[in-house]
Every structure is written in C-alpha cells, then in structure tokens.
Length: 309
Image (cartoon, rainbow, N blue to C red):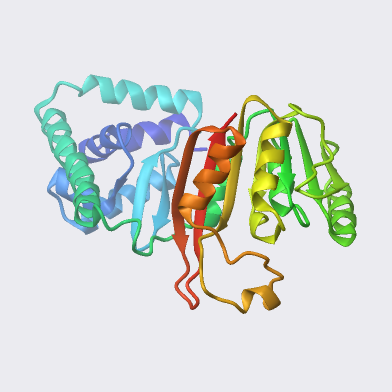
C-alpha cells in the first residue's frame, strides 16, 4: 500500500480528484470518463495509471472496454484522505458539472438497455438468447420446490425426482420395471438422498396409502398405461385434500412407429381427453395446455395438465 504522503501527492491534482469523485459514485469506463470530463483519452488514461499504481482504483476488463472503480479495500487512512478531498470540493462548479454529466451518462446506459429490449419485445422468447434455456429455467424452478411429499408415478429411473428430492420433504418413485427401480435406488444411494425411495408397482394400482402425498406426477408415463383414466383416479386417491396432480404427456399424434420404438400404448392424448380424465376422477381447477412443440419430425407436442383435489 502507498503511504499517506504518496496518497496526498495523488490527491494534489484537481483532475485526479474529479476522477476519484466520479468513481466513488459509479464504476465507469474510460470512454464514459472522457465524456463526463470532456478530456482526451490519453490524459485520462495517464491519471488512471497513476491512481491504479497508488492503489486508489482498480480496473476490470469487459470485452474491449476497461472499467475503473474505487479500491474499497484501500487502507482506512487512505480512504479517509480520499473522502476528505471529495467533501472539500463537493460544492465546486467543476464537481457539480461533473455530477450532472454523470447523471446523463448513466441515463444513456439505461436507455441503451431499454432500446434493445423494446426492439425485441414480443420476440425475445422466440429467438436465441445467450444463457437462456429451458434446462436452466427448469433448474431455477426446482429450487422453489416446497417441503412437501411427492409421488412420481411411472418414474422410470426417476431423474426428475432426483432433482425434486433436493428440496422436497419426501419423494416416492413408483415404476413397474424392476430394473428401473434397482437403477433408481442405486442412484439415490450414490447421491446421498435419504428422502427418496423407489417402489415396484403399477400406476393403475399405486402401492401408496390414500391421502398420503401433496403432489402426484405423471411425467410421460400416462401413454404407457393400459388404462390411463384408472391411473388418473389412482393419483386422485393418494392425494391429500388440496393436493395437486400434474401430467406431462404427448399431445395426440399419428406416429404409429412410437408403439415399437418407445413401447407406447397410446399415441398421446387430446386436450379434451385429459380434461375429461381429470374431471371424472374428481379434480377441480383443471387446466390443460400445449406447452411445447418439437421442430423435427414427427413434431411431437407436449401437453401439460393439472388439477387440484
């Protein structure tokens, strides 16, 4: 750290004090400092170099731009000198003018951001946006899982349940494949989940007590059931009053090869069919919507249905 004498020498120059006064308010790029102070780049860069050498400021790179900010980890005496210098010139015409220019620059930053989002309003969800993916959004939403009891019916390996178990009170996976159940149990043990269990069973005759869970899931499982309406009724049975069923499945389609390729029993379901299944089982507050469509043939569509007991 530079000693107090060196700090005082740095503060003896009015331009450096003006720069420091601005940086105490906001991190700024060299170009922004040029515009605020109405000075050339070489002059400002020279002063910034001395301030950085004296450890009063630090810089960071962002693409082609370099941003400068006050070094808040500077020693207490140095920061006290800096604050004293700032206060002593706070009401001067130069500082007042600099603050007015700074306000304008920050408003310009805001407007540039607004202009971009105004230009893509209505199109943002349809176009590519770096870092924005359904996978990322899914992980984000999983963090909102409350401390409830969940039944994942027709869970397979239970990959969704492995994520839900991080937050939920208890997750029970039910599947009729011994191999799937075995694999899921090993995976749960490997990941250290004590609140995640796997049970061998049929979604049309769920091996769980009535009114024992808060949330029942049928994720891409219903089209494998021999009697899908019976599976929905079983979900209703095991739910507590006020509990919710969520179904994610394929919208009705004509891709017959799915029976051989994926062992599908049903070629998806229409929105009306799912609505009737839930209504006949006794659910209320029913919602059924198509939520996704694949770009590649056969262009499977995904339907999301939910209801409350």
